[in-house]
Image 1 (cartoon, helix red, strand yellow):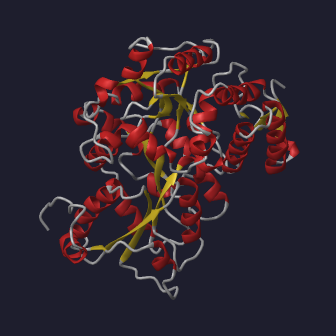
Image 2 (image 1 turned 45 degrees about the horizontal axis):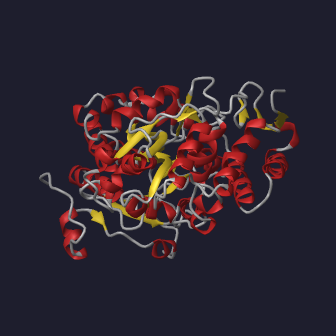
Length: 464
């Protein structure tokens, strides 16, 4: 089959089926879950992935690879299983699919933070023997390899993307408030002072936003809480790798919750109801920030994908109107700045039809050329040295070099099966403070919850 371009979003379904020459129709989750019988078609490869609303970037990536794969393997059909859901719901629905041989995909798109939890639940199988013969395995960053390696030493995924986080700020909002265009705060207090300046300037813009509360899921823990906690200087974070225990009683934990309480007490952020809206991110990216209604945002390297020509809110002026600043530590100490890094990859479920065939398609999905194109369209940071060496990759966005450089000093979440539950406890502590609980009481409840999650033998007091 000659090389072709993927169909446009408006392509008729029957035309799409003919066009893709082997890529099956996109089935709704409910339809797939209702498929009867346990006899799986050995020539069908199902791949499950999160689809953000009407976004088509992942669909394009998979479809493009499937066209080439089907041309080389005409008897094999690739079936896309898009799960249109919020972050937490995606994990739940993906796990529901993987739990049964009848519904399980053959490949799944996994967030590194949930992967080891899915391993512990028996949803994923080790692929160490498969990656040993994968020519690009050595191109993957060591930290990303570690994130997909279980406590048993086995590899459970092939990392594809990573990300870093920083402060995004609107230069016009800053100019109107008399703040500098080259703003780089050196402490939390300087962030708060900038937000107060915007508030007191008469600006229509909300001064500051960070994701917080249970409806925001892992965004609250990672983009919000941990971007503060890892800069508190008490050297504890969430987990002590040396003692292999979770940290309780951290002064930095209370200080982080106090910062959150401050932005609400001083009316420096959006309303409580807006914070608890699970779709607030979409409003920020498509209206609040582009329309100069928000001054400062803590968020990830990928968000400018919304402003490309094919994004949900094209905003060609954003490189001139948006500034980037490193997130400072609490008082400027330590390394001076903080960023968190995560990432996504592909894994093979326990109930795969044919693991060798699934891995062959996985390799097609992660070829160098395919991943360069995917990174550019998806606006993400690569974990692969071969992709990073591409001139196309290095120049695709005004921000890619900035965010890629942040990886050198990035913190990573504890790659442990219990982390997702601990993360939920963080979100609950944030929401408690947002709704009136004192930071000290919320932190104490977090300590109790984490002890219940991991066991008293697996926790220790801060600086113990």
